[in-house]
Length: 66
Image (cartoon, rainbow, N blue to C red; front, side):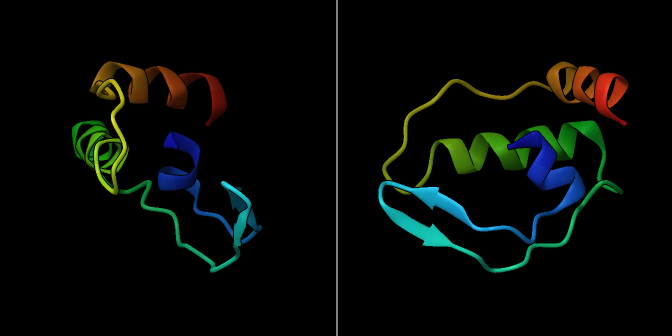
């Protein structure tokens, strides 16, 4: 999720048998805290229940993959 939010995506994403292929721009210009908040919101919306994403996880992702 962090990768999609920071770098965007233009490939199909298959979720529960449905494929979604709308292009999404990256939002790497947002702060790590903002990206963590958006990711946490998504992970707990649409009937989902998941642990929050922390700004430290976003920072670590950027250190490794940017």
